Length: 204
Image (cartoon, rainbow, N blue to C red):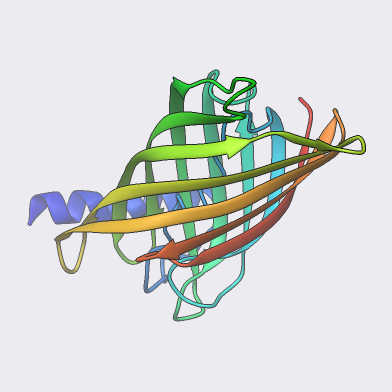
């Protein structure tokens, strides 16, 4: 009971610091879409999204110091939950090379891990782990980077109903870069999580 109260107070404090009233009825999955592929650009990103769960709208900011898999990726955002209340979410990801692209095999493979939370009336801690497979395709000076990212996600819920779940999710995405300085990013999550996002990535 004391742990539940502590987590509840912690969630309320986080939302208070971010200017969010503690009235959200569901937790937004911070990792969907994860937007992580071999060569994902560094810099700042701003994304409009349809989060998981629900059909609401959200906005998310991202930062990566260097193109993936170098360094870490960070994100924080606000989104509508299924009850049309605001929820706050945030997390970080790490990745590393499993396979580098070659002339015979033009795609690369990354392992990926992450940790983050969604905060509404309750708190959900989500820990994704998986791989990402993608390739860079140059078409008339436009960089086209399609990728697929399957993963499992361990969700631990704390609050009115403590729970532990294991979800399966797959990201399908593409990055379009018309100049080296900025890119347009699309992402969709399928499976136990369903989400969409479109955003603009700018250099540091």
